Structure formats: C-alpha cells, structure tokens
Image 1 (cartoon, rainbow, N blue to C red):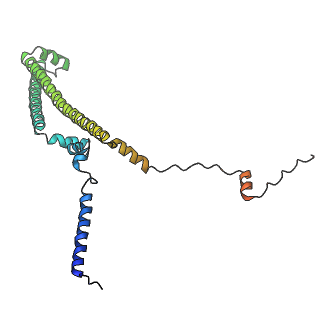
Image 2: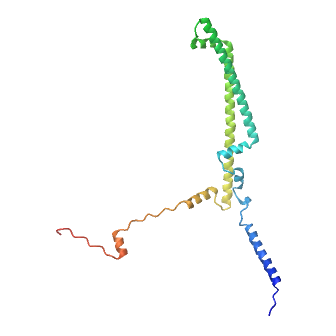
Length: 225
C-alpha cells in the first residue's frame, strides 16, 4: 500500500490553484479588457465629457482664461461707453428743460414743442452735445457688436472642434472595424424597439371546415327552384 504525503499534496494543489486563478486574472486584464488608448472616442469624451450641449459649452468657455479676460474687458468697455451716453443724455435734457423755462417766461406761456425744437436747433451748446452723444452711442453699439462677435466666434470654434474630433473618432472606429457611435446608437434603438405583431387574416368558413373535418352544410335552394 502506498503512503501518500498529505501535506505535500495539499501544497501542490494550492500552488496549482494559485497559478490557475492568476492566469484567469491576467487574461481578464489582457486583450479582452478595452484600454482607454483603444477607445476611438477617448479624446472626444475627454474634451466634451457631456457632449456638445449648451451647458457644457458655457462651462468650457468659462474655463478659458484668455477668452474670459477678453469678454470681461469688452463688457467693461461697453459699460463705460453706455455710462458716457447716459451722462450726455442728462446734459441734453438739462439744456432742453432750462431753455424751455427761459422761453416760457419770455413768452408768458408754455412754449410749444415745435418752437422748442426750432430754438434747440439754433442753440450751439445743445448741438455740440448732441453730436458727442451720437458719436458715443455709435461707439457703444460698435463695442456691443464686437462683444457678440467674440462670443459667436468662440461658439463656432467649439462646434468646429467637436465635429473635427467626432470625425476623427469615427474614422478610427471604422479603421478598427468597429461601429461608429452613431451606428451603435441606431442599432441599440432598433434592437430595443418593440417588434411589430404580424397581421393575421381571419379564418374563413372553408378554413374552419378543413380544420375540424365537419363538411359545410349545403346551401338551401331558393323557393320555386
């Protein structure tokens, strides 16, 4: 009778089991598990984690220090120009009010608006301020349009960058023999859609007769025939 060494056998089994489990772990971390580098959409998702949405676009622009500095400077300049226009408006209104009072006292009655406008047209200080006001308003409007152009150009840049990264990712997916993200989404939508039930025609009397084996009753002859 053979004398088995139980401790040695147990140790051998434990070593084999450890090797087996280790092999499975290595297989699971090998080719079967996709790595970030193998994902064709990794760069796109890193740049646009939530896709191209209004919220993500605003958040991305808020993190651009150069862009925010340009926008802040533009907003401050527009605010300053707008304040200048408002100040000139107050000065013009003051001259208008004082001239109306003076003319009304001279005439002994409230001066009509038409006559006041004629007098203002001939009053140099008022016309000088009016020209300054027009120039300041035009400058403020130009600054407003410039600010809008900066925002619009940055928004277009976001769209162009997203589309470029998406096109590049789609090309990588096709080169790797993988479906594009749009194709995968369409396939998933199709597979999750409820299957259409086939339209079944109602059985005829002849079909029931054949199925049951009961012959059809002969049609009654018409009266008199």
